[in-house]
Structures are given as C-alpha cells and as structure tokens.
Amino acid sequence: MTISAEQPGFEIRDPRFHDVIAPEARLEVLAGGFTFTEGPIWHREEQWCVFSDIATSRQYRWSEAEGLSLFRTPSNQANGNCFDREGRIVSCEHASSQVTRIDHDGKLVRVLASHFEGKELNSPNDIVCDSQSRLWFTDPSFGRIREDLGILRDQELPHQGVYRLDPDGSLHMVADDFRQPNGLCLSNDERQLFINDSAAPAIRIFDVTRDGSLVGGEVWADVTGQGSFVEGSGKWVPDGMKIDTHNRIFCNGPGGVHIFSEDATCLGVIYLPEKSTNFCFAGPKLEDLLITASTRLYRIKTQTTAL
Image (cartoon, rainbow, N blue to C red; front, side):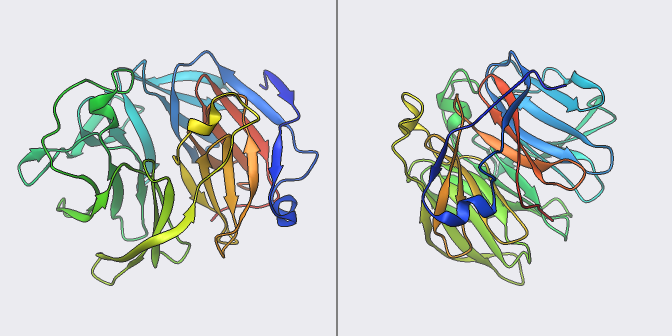
C-alpha cells in the first residue's frame, strides 16, 4: 500500500528524458522508518522485492499484496543483493566481508566468497549475476571505515577491487585500479561491464572477454550535478546502477537517479527528497523503478522496461 505520493522534481538535461519518465509521473512512498536502505531486487514471478537496511543489519521484503515484512536479521549489515540463475538471493555483507547465498527465506546462509589470496575481502558492496552463473561484485572499503555501514577495522587487501566469482567457486580479481568501486551492471548482451567509482565520480566501461577477464576501463560518463533540489545532495556519489532495454544506464548520483542515453549523454535526473542509494526495475512489466533512499522505499513509473 502506498503511504503517500507526490510530484517529484526533475532536472531535464536533454528532451529525451521524457521518453523515459513522463512529466506527470509521481513519486510514491511504499515503506518508511529505515536507517540506510540499499540493494533492492525484484522477484519477477512472485512479484516481491527484497532490500537491505545496512545500519540496522536487517533485510526486508515488500510486495503490493502483503506490504512490508522482515526477511532476515541479523544480515551482517548486508548491502547489495542479486538473484542467481536458480532464483536464490545472493548478498554482499559489509560486517563479515563476505558474499553469501541465502536460501529458505533467510534461514540458510552459505558463504560463497570471503578471502582473496588468503586475505579478507574489504566489504563487498554490489553484485550482479550473468547468464553463465558468474557473479561480479565490487569490494570498496566503506564497511571498514564507516561505523554506520560496518565494523571499523583495518583493511587486509592493498586495493579496492572488482571480482568475478565463477560457478566452480574460484574467485578472480578483474580490476584493481578503482578508488572506491560501487555500482555495476552488465550490458544487455553481456559483452560490456559498467562499473562506477564513488571517489571519481564516474562510470567506467570494460569489454568482457571470452574467458571472463576485463579489458579497457575508460571513463564512459561523469556523474555530476549541483544537487540544488536537496540541501547537501551535491555530496552524493555514484552508487546503484541498472540498464534498460534501450541500453540506457540509470545511476544514482548527486540529487537522485541520473539517466544516461546509450551514447553516454545524461538526459536528466529524478530528484529524491533524501539521499538515494540504489533501485531496481519492478512490477508486472518491469516498468516501475523501486528506489531505496535512506529512510524510505520509493516507486516511480517509467516509460521503459528492463530485460
């Protein structure tokens, strides 16, 4: 059930923005009372969303039919989530420095990755699964340097890397030159991987080779904005990222959700009344955008969809 609905603010940088978001689109609040929401994922068949509240170490489930319920606690301050090819939830945990797979409504948790070359991962952040069941995830240091997002402790690895976890359990570092890698998404044909750097702030693009390594890594787009709609939002950094069927990239940034065309032109920004962190395409036709933003879960209807 919707708590409230309001007309959102938009920053229009290109007239094509309204090919994606209609001028009359409204921003709905679906649930509230959280601390630092993140990592929403949508179950297409059963029509529900799971998302994290990092600071309280909880994960929640929301659906139109049943509303909000607690999914898992403690979650080891889980952040990003994804579904694997069998429909199981995979989570990035800040406090444990692990990637875990969750079965049976959160009652069974299996560790998939915790160390690289004998050293603890930093704090796995965001994750995606490809058609070959490979998991790609970022590993910045946020869960070690911010008490509200993890446990303050020294970092064992000398880098903030990006990894590929293969179905056989082998872990491969595919990039180590990021300052703070955060959101990531694959192109629809899975030939390219987009990864943003919260400390840059920018989105980089890599080609995915046949053996799963990455080449390239040039800056694809800068994620910039004054954030004048919300006081202090200019400090917001690139975070969650997704792609639609028209190869447009959606990325959290200053003020809210930034929308980029296939040629990397920023079409505009959906402003949020509080700091937005991540989002997913949802609904029966995957035309809704569910957005996690600090204390609330929001929804806005789009004029596009995702695969």
